Length: 448
Image (cartoon, rainbow, N blue to C red; front, top):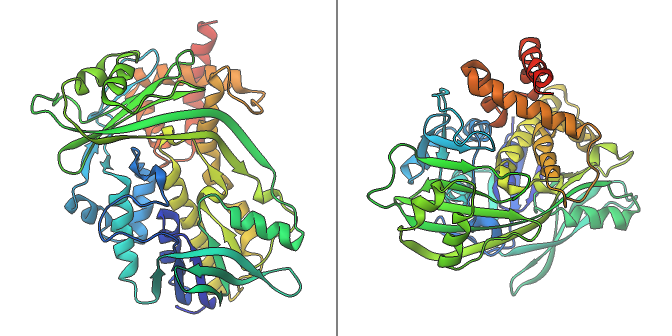
C-alpha cells in the first residue's frame, strides 16, 4: 500500500542501483523523487557521470531475474531494443587456466548481452512510467540534512543548474550515488564513526573496443570469457551487443593495462594465453574509440559493524561494496541488495513497524548477498602484487577451487551447480554438498 511507511522518499543517483531502489520504494511511499546530477539522454547513450558505462558490462542471470521481478517484461524490452541472448555453458566459451576451453554443455539458462546504456535506459523508461516516481536531472546533491539531535537524516541539499541551492525533506534518503561520499561526509558532520574498509588492491586497467561482427565470424560460440593466469594477469571478454557488434574488453593488473589505439589493442589481445580473441578481432572493423578505465581496488565498507547509524538514511550498491568489474558482478549484486530491501520494507509495512532501525537491519540482511561475490573478488590475491589482507585460508581455498573446476569439467551436474552459483542464482552453500566436497577433497589429496 503506497504511503504505508512514509510520504516521501528520495533516491540520490539515477544509475541502475538508484532506479531499482526507486521502484522498490514506490510501493511504500506516496512519492519517490530521484535526483541525478547528469543530464539524462533520451536514448541508450553513455553519460558523463558514469565513465565506466562505455566499458563491457555483464548482467548475470541472478541479477537479470531480480530486475525482471521489479520490472515485468524487462527481458522482452531489452530484446526488442537489441540485446542478444546467449546460452550459458554452450554458447559462451570459457577459457580458464588448465581448461582452454572449459567443457561446453547446455546448462539450461540464458543471459542477455548488451551495452550498459541500453540496460539503464530501459530501466529508466520503466521507472518514469511509474506515476508516483519523479526523476529530476541536473540536480547535484551536495549534502544530507541532519535532525537537530544529529541522530537522523531529514532530507537533502542540492544544486540545480543555473537555479541555486535548494533543500527538500524526506522520510527516507537512499544514497545510490556510487561512491557513497555523501554518506561518509554526513557521518563526519554528526560525529558518528565511518565504517571500516577492507580493500583488495589489484590496480586493474582495462579497455573496451567495439567491432563490427565480421560475416565470417565463428558461429561455434557467441561470447567468450578468457580468464587470466596468476603469472600474466591478462584477460579478456567478448560479447555480442546491439546492432550486430561485439564489445571486446581486455584487462591487466598492476600496470599491465591495455592500450587505447587499435593496433596496440589487437597486439595486446595477441599476448593472451590463447589466440581466440585475437583471431576474432584481427580483421574486424573497429567502431569508434577505445575506452579505458581503471580501478585501484575492490572496497567493502563494514557498515554492519557500526554500533550506531542515522535513521532515515540508507546507502546501497557501490557505496557499500565495490567489486573488480572484471567479474561482472556489480549490477547484479546491487539488484539483489534491493530485493532484500524490498523484503524488509514489505515486512515493516505489514507489521506497522515504521522506518526506525531500517539501515542496521538492511546491513545485516545483505551480508549473505555480499559473501559470494566478495569471495570472488578475493581471488585477486592470486597476483603477487595485490595489496590488502590476504585471507589466512586463501591457499587452501585456491586449491579447493582448482579441484572443484576439475570435478565440474568431468561432471555435468557439478558444472551446472558451479555456474548457477557463479551467476548468483544459488548460494555458495550449494557447493558444500557432502558428495561434492568429498570428491573435491579426494582429488586434492591425490594431487599432493
